Image (cartoon, rainbow, N blue to C red; front, side, top):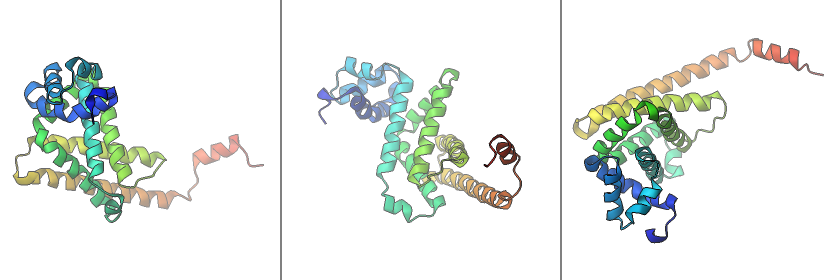
Length: 218
């Protein structure tokens, strides 16, 4: 793509991985942005306009790039051939493989997102990644399961990242083992929840009873 004629959205997409590559040395700041712009022959002022919201906007664009890169590494057929547990594990491990060359940039990004003023944006970014992983895994839930699954995976992913940033084991084996245990926990929870719902589906429901009082069948 000729970035000279790129839109601001296209510039953000193109610059994000280059900013991350520089962030380990320059940080998520104008210096890192300028270095990324120079590497791609983008006018610095235009690059700064694309990221006028500062560091969090740069991190947001990088995480979106990681989301797209993760999705691009799988075909629907490949994911469909896996059990659900394997799909989620593969997706998270693929994200980590994408991030591994920029662990210091990730460390700095997490520190910025941990600031109180960035808490809401951090939560939205975590939710977005969890949502994409569940969608790629084939989840189509629209009831409360939609929310519980993403909240659980988001918390597991955040905890796994914390381990990943400190993990110097061979091939990040400790991180993979940690992730495996946590996903096993999700599967047990989902199985127990499904069993509970099956056992209680025919029990009297106070909410249904009140609903019938308000909206009687005629």
